[in-house]
Length: 254
Image 1 (tube, rainbow, N blue to C red):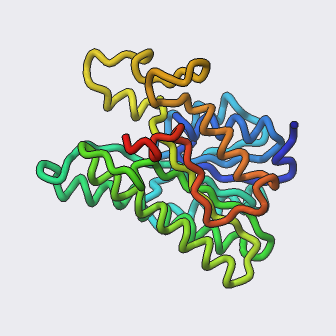
Image 2: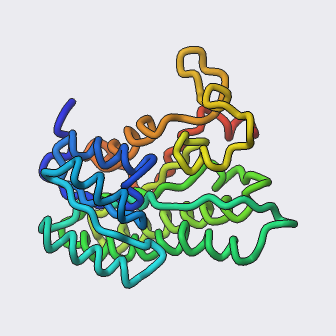
């Protein structure tokens, strides 16, 4: 199946690396015009030069409402419309309930949760006339908190709740906008690699899809495929849904 996003315009936040990068490339290969944003301007500009064609880059601090308004205006002015919004940008900071700092907790909420609140508001405003799809990147920690990442877990739980609230709003207002979230376990991104303890190798944490064993982390491209599904018309019956990419971890209580 090809051209699943033919004629659609998408905006992907955090699009210069990790899952966002894979989503940008996949969306382009499926026929979409893609705007992507990132706080890392150098990486974003370099990627835009490599991709060319139907892509554009905008520097974007997702925790800033002003930046959101500027980015949305730039996308609609350059590409004419918006059909798909992927709220992917986020940060990971360690800290349990006893040692975590309020400063880090506030930063996690601002970047991971407030950005989704603003993004959903801006996305709904841009798509309420013609409809579209909003995909929010949450985490399995929304439901199964990680002790060493209490603040991160809380921020992703907020993403889950905001997704359901936005979906309900669109349904009650009669907007043809679907809002769904994806809840991966681990994703082998630069952000995860930076958080790994010394001595932990790639092989130790990556999931083995052939034997369904070994680690719990997935390559970003696998999660990008789920984002594509939610962005496409194939998921037209889904809104307010949580797509768990956890390989039964929740059921096992791990």
